[in-house]
Image 1: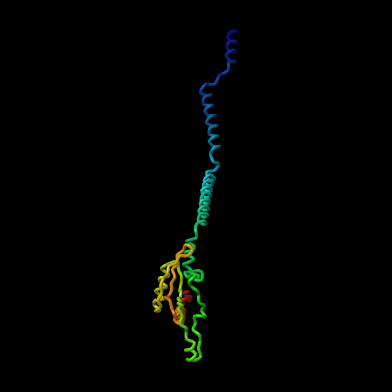
Image 2: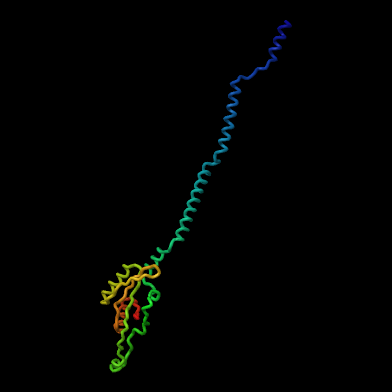
Length: 206
């Protein structure tokens, strides 16, 4: 009997050990948990915030590209603007286009002087000179505008020509009458043009 008691007491004091597969499953669970935490840390906090950030970056790049394009367009020559302004105001300042061989005649000098009677009219008749005069009706950068003016003036019975000149790297098309040897005829045609809303400038050829 004493021997049996000792044997039972010895067996009761032995500790029970956990199976190996339990430790394996525990380690696997811990590893998966750590991997999940790392995965969540790398992901954006909010998918909506991520999409918004991408959209903002795209908008920023578009604005930079637009600003660069605008700066390049500002540096381009203003040929298109010059063409637009010319369409709005087809007539050019004649005083800047006249060569040295031409002199503008004031309007007061193109009008024939008033006379009181026939005798004074005959005595104050226009002196014969070798001077020649022309009327310039307009100057255009667009040839079609010059041709249109020439055609409309032809309906009034006034013959004109289109002259092409090159000034400051630009081509201008001038509409002019044939030369006149008489100021009276010059004034008569100038007045007729004014009555049809065409302002012609009288010039003397040297």
